[in-house]
Amino acid sequence: MRLTTKKLTGVFLVVLLTLAGCSAPQKLEQADQHYTDGHTRALMKLTHWQFSGKIRVKTEDSANSANIQWLQEGENYRIVLSGPLGKVGAVIDGNPYRVTLEMPDHPLYQAQTPEALLYEHFGWNLPLSHLFYWVRTLPAPGSNFDAKTNEEQQLAVIQQDGWDIRYDRFHNQFTPALPGRMKINKGDLQLTLVMNQWQPEFVTAQH
Image (tube, rainbow, N blue to C red; front, side, top):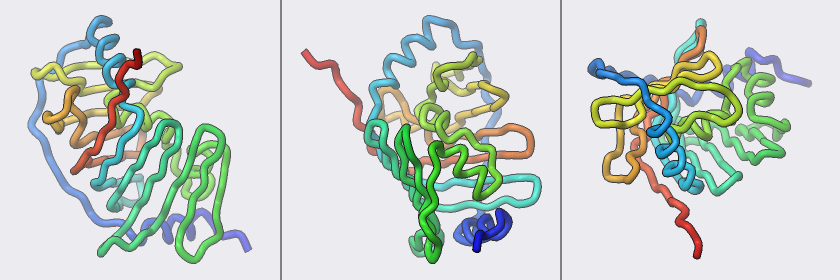
């Protein structure tokens, strides 16, 4: 028997915890082409990483959060969402050709794109393929964008395809700096992603 979207969303969100946070206003400036070109070249070298933290998804009807671990190895990724005491609530495995969703006591769900899978089972219109770039403070390829920098010359805002992406915390021990918190908004869907710990692997040029 096929479960309804409402029931699947309830199963998925049962692991979620509440996040809270606030930030001081930032003085922002338009990022010029020279800045964005250099920024893109530097961050596109980050092809393998792992980070852990928190994710919060807020819609018109609910606001819920979970622990998150994101492992990226080139085009392959694994996203693990868990609740209290590390109990796994969902595992998303994917690549450009196939994505699967695994939850306890449920069959394995699969789709050709992460967007189709998330929308079909949870009703979320979330561009997970774009998030692969946005978590690195990069605009997703293939569409126009607007970008702004903060006073430290860090990319602080991306506006793309109707989405507003803002970064207000950074891990400055890395070069380039990597985000510590980002907020994504479009319509009644809001996502907050807190990266508490990064393990990046930048690809260097081969000679």
